[in-house]
Image (cartoon, rainbow over all chains, first blue to last red; front, top):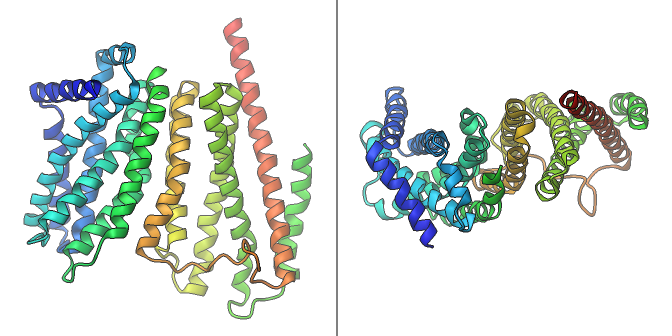
Amino acid sequence: MRTLLAVLRKDLMVEGRSRDLIPAMALLALLLLALSGSAGIRGAPSSIVVWIAVVVSAALGLTRSFGLETDQEQIHGLRMAPVDPGWIFLGKAAANFLLVAVVEVLALGAAVVFLDLPVGGRLAPLSGVLALGGAAIVSLGTLLGALLAVTRLREALLPLLLLPLSAPAVMAASGATVKLLGTRPEPVTGEVVLLAAFLLLFVALGLLLFEYVIED
Amino acid sequence: MLPLVLSAIALPVGIFLALVVAPVEAFQGEPYRILYIHVPSVVTAYVGFTVTFVASVLYLWRRARRYDRLAAASAEVGQVFLTLVLLTGPIWGRPVWGAWWTWDARLTTALILWFIFAGYLMLRAWAGPQGAAASAVVAVIGFLDIPLIHWSAVLLRTLHPRPAVFRPDPAMPGSMLAILLFNMAAFILTYLALLGVRLRQETQRARLRALEEAA
C-alpha cells in the first residue's frame, strides 16, 4: 500500500511540475468533441463521442506517461526497488486514473456545450459510469503502456492495441451513458456488471503479469 | 509434409462436395453453400488463436523460444482464416439478410478480434525477437478479452443464425452435416500444414541468426 501511494505521489508530482500530460490529453479530447459537434452530432447518442475522446486521449497520455518513465531510466529504479511489482502497477494505474478522470470531467462539460448532451438530473449515476468506465480503460491501458514502453517497443502501437482491446469497456460505458441520458432512462445493471468484470480481469492480469512486463 | 499433402487433396474435394454434392437449402437457396467455407474458417481461426494463447502462456512460464515461434505462426494463420470469415460473411449476408453487415454479437466479436490480432501482428513485426514477452502478454490479454467483447455486443443486439452444429442435436440434415464436418477437417488440416511451414521458416531463421552471431 505504501508503494502504491509513493508511486502515485511521484507521478502526480511529476505532472504537477511539468504539466506535460493533462493539457495534451484535454486538447485532444476537446478537439474530437468540437469536430463531432461541427459535423452535427447531437443529443444522447453522442455519448459514444465522449467515450472515444476519453479512450483516445488516454492512449496519448499513457504513451507519454511511460515514455517519461523510460527516457531517463527511472524505470530501472522502480524495477530494482524491493517491493511487489503489483503495487507499482496499482500506483501507476491510480495516477493514470486521476489524469483520465480530469479529462472525463472536461469532456463531459464540452459535450454538454458542443453536443447538447442532456445530463440534467442524471449527474450522480453518470459519474458512477464515468468512474467505472475510466478505471476499466486505465487498468488495461496501464498494463499495455508499461509493456510497450519498458520493452522499448514502439509506443506508437498503443492506440492500435488499446482501442480494440478496450472495445468491450467502451461499448458498455457508452451504452450505459446512452441509456441513462435517453428520454426514458433505463436500468444499466448489465453494463455496470460488465464494466466491473472488465476492471477486475485487467487489475488481476496487471497484478499477475506486471512482473513479466517490467523485467525485460 | 503429410498435412500439406492431405490438405491439398481434402480442400478441393471439400469444395466439390459443398458446391455440387450438398443438397440445396430450402429457405436460403444456393447462397447457403458459403456456409461450408464460412463455418470451417471461423472454427479454424478460433483454434489458431487458442493455440496462440496456450503457446503464449507457456512462453511466459518457460521462456523457451519455440513457444514464441508457435504463438506467432498460429496467430498469423488464424488471422488469415478470420479474414476469410469476415469476407465470406457479407457475401452471404447480402442476399440472405439483405445487408452486407450488421452489428450482431458474433460479427462484432469477430471484427474486433480481427483488429486485436492485427495489432498483435503489427507489434510482432515492429518489435522483432525482442518483443517476445510483450507479444505473449498481448496475446493473453486479447484472448481473454473475447468473452467480454461477445458479452458487450450481446448487451446491444443479436441477429446471427444460432449455432446449428455444436450442440447435442445438430439442426441440420445428415448429408449437409457430413459435408460441413468434412470441410472443417480439411480446413484444420490446412491450418496445420501452413502452421508447419511457418514454424519451419521461423526455426530456420532463428538458427541462421544464431550462426551469424557465432560467426
